[in-house]
Amino acid sequence: MSNLQQQKFDLVTRDLRKWQGREEWFFNRDHTDTYELWYEGRYKRAEVWQKKVIGQLIKKDERVKTLLEFGCGTTRFTRWWKEIGIEASGGDISPFMLGQGVHLFDGDLVLADSHHMPFKDHTFDALAFITTFEYYKDPVKVIREAARVGKYGIVFGMMNRNSPKVARRRIQELLGKNPFYVTATFYTPKKLMAVIAEALHDRDYTVEWTATGLPEWFPVQQWQQPYGDFFGLHVRLNDVK
Image (tube, rainbow, N blue to C red; front, side, top):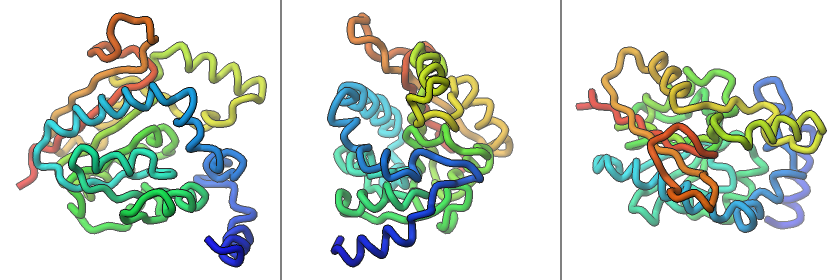
């Protein structure tokens, strides 16, 4: 981005702080500019296991060749789908995150709201939400949009409510030290499946999930128990012709 382009971008986005009527961390340059560094540091090991879990789930559906990741941010995961044989595109509501993503990802990106996806029915084989679904005020509407645009299913990568880190994050928020999860709704697999059931009550689908994000000293790093910092969940749509 040239200096002139940067000046214009900064002018347009100077007062941009809110989405869904509330302030969000991903509309704050102080946070978005350092987002990639988190994964290169203390969260690198977590990222490895998150990708392993998500990859195992989505690859079980051999129909999936193309995918749209909504809430793609700086394209951290969007860049990775190609490694497991899936052609990915990305969408996000934050121009600050996408402003970085366009320099890191050589695929298609769109600035859009996940509640109103600007795509025709069945544009992609699947939709993905990786640590972004927690921020949606109308999750039922988002799931219905995802099932409309993603022909064969939806894959979620979620911060798990059944984790001691949730309590720590809330305490940090009260002390004004952690702005990243103030507006987040943490889900368990069971809670997410209840939202999915409401959104897709008229569809034939199956669900599979697995959890990770367990302590490094724990004897397993992935299991079928609803405990851990992260879980992956895949909705396979069975009624598509």
